[in-house]
Length: 295
Image 1 (cartoon, rainbow, N blue to C red):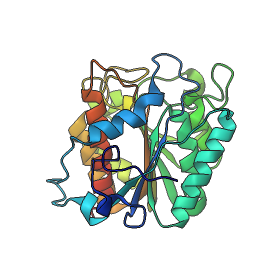
Image 2 (image 1 turned 135 degrees about the vertical axis):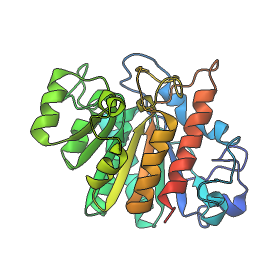
Image 3 (image 1 turned 90 degrees about the horizontal axis):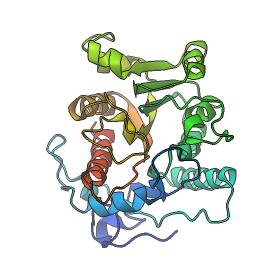
Image 4 (image 1 turned 180 degrees about the vertical axis):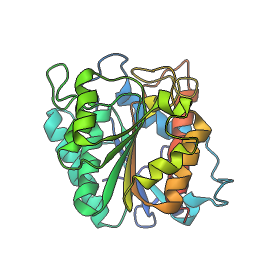
């Protein structure tokens, strides 16, 4: 696949630090939008994230490094899903992620709708033993199917649970009764946003999340998990979400104590009147990269 140039890659970094050969980290854009059910526009998410990333500082004050220059970050041209079924599109994503893993690349997949996440999650679950799936989200996404599709964004975690039930959910505040029942039956570890706010998981809830994770962790981050005051350009912005610092505290804790093997960020639906959501998503991605290599 073609590697994007400085003018349109992640962070706008020169070829020396963004070539495929010189980069340990690869950004894969998967602008799939097939089953969005409210706000539209997730297909434009990856492009707008890359554009906004050019205004994110290279230096991270917490880790005291410019990781983009230390490890290199290559951004690949976005995938083309034209004339593909939903199933075939997901297979394409999985096959490419699998190929990148075999080349020892750390893969960051950008959506697109949340349904894309089952593909890299399956690739990583196949490649890594002792792997937990960590989901940041406003919604459980555990429906068997939604609006006639079992590949819906609202069913992505149910598809993931078919091959890996070690799932921890953070920030949930909207779900169906069907999903609540499945969470209990399947032993899904769910940290509801309201419970976090009320201290029901203890004040040190981040440590409790960490204790439930295996050695290796794959993160799927739906940006609607964050409070709309941080990101509201998303399909279904739910009030009462996760705040920035508490989320960074958790990600930092996991990065120091577990092996973050890869991650995806999904469901940005860019709004030209609210470009802060694009920028905050790009910054989120760079923060996760920094935390993943913070040991």
